[in-house]
Length: 211
Image (cartoon, rainbow, N blue to C red; front, side, top):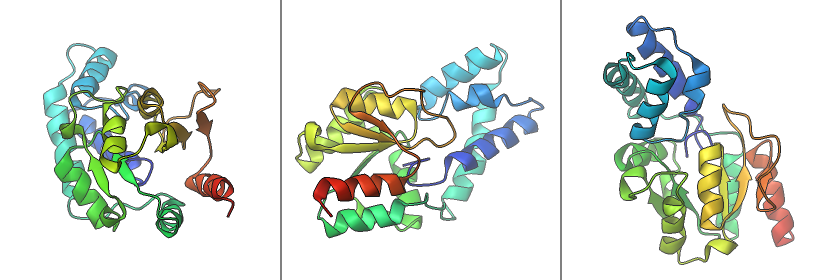
């Protein structure tokens, strides 16, 4: 969802920088980018390791969340280029779609609703619905189960490396559309395809269905 359907990762980074500046900390975005796609526990581990044990994670997180959630609960986040045409095509072809996100349920659904996307998905699996976070495959396996589909026939669209690893472990074919973090230099296998945008995924879909 974030960084793939919604242009929200840049917004989250901006508010992380603002939260750090509130606490007179110089933000290191190299460290920050390693947090993309993680849940709170892993985010804390990465930031504390990267900044040192004196990093005031709880205070930074409180400011960061307040700024980000105040924005995203009240204003629609822009959709990423190509998202709407791709979802329109999936609807035309009656391809069921689901979301697998590390974001908590209430916030995820609110963001999708404000962006006009919530009704496009048959299922939304959020970070608080699974025991194990990405890169564990649980979220993707739960989406496939809810859609009553074998993972081997499913495509996953991901921006982050963590999400790619999760979807591949679940048995999906993965199209990676990098956002703030560049993709690895080489795909990790034949089921991992790196593309420039969701427009490229639409082209691939049309080829796959002969349209």
